[in-house]
Length: 313
Ligand code: ADP
Ligand code: MG
Image (cartoon, rainbow, N blue to C red; front, top):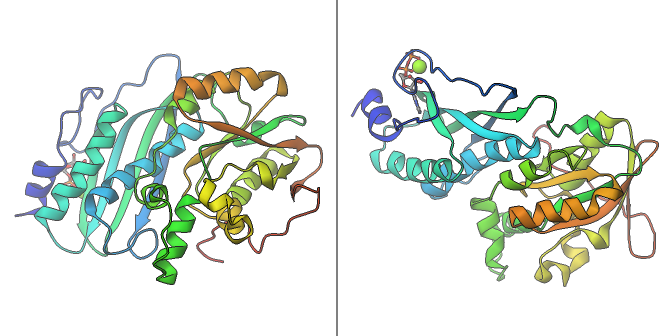
């Protein structure tokens, strides 16, 4: 099998929403009139973002999911992706399983693979995604306003708990949701779209809730207060809250949305969440000033050792 056989067999599929897909020097796509085009890239590196023994199908899912999550964070409709692969060897079974996970999620979201690149090297997956929002409507990190409520979708800390367990080699029984969340995150694309015109600022929680919310605060020039008790958590993690607090407030790989909206929009936020089929929770408020205050039930400041994940810290 050659590089080209691999591309043809496993990564060339019909791209119904593109003018020209895989097979030429570049793809051709036709953006929707009246829309802004979003572009984002996310890379996964073996040993850094995933364990060498993870199932290739789950890896295919996750490589696309983390990119879809960036579109969700902006309220964008994902449309096209390119897929760059560095593979240590041409492994037919691996490629087939990886493609199965990747294309299943792509089909679910109506996304076409329109190109990519394939080279030999340490296992690395890089996806570039293109999406659209109506002109000027995108949910941006710099749009939070003083007085906004802060909301979070789903539950936090599950993936970080699974990762922590794996790294410590413990055999304790964690909720099944934890491993599922780590290996097969479900990007909140429908929620992001439903929040257009409802939310002000948004982002996806990938490096840790506190670190990611801090990005909204810095970009918007505001501060925030968050009630730790209000952070959405799995009952089993909530039962040992102090033990799991770091995973919940600052663990990575959640791929939930954190967003702000005027208090008058609370009912519209709940309607958007119901439409998207995902729970949302109000966890705090945007304040004048700067920085993030985490408060416990008695109003005491909660200190975290770190706010989130940093590849170079
Ligand atoms: P070039 O030499 O012009 O860079 P390539 O030989 O790398 O072209 O790729 C041939 C075609 O296959 C191109 O259309 C490219 O977009 C596509 N392609 C290469 N690798 C992948 C991949 N992993 N997934 C999807 N498409 C790919
Ligand atoms: Mg190439």
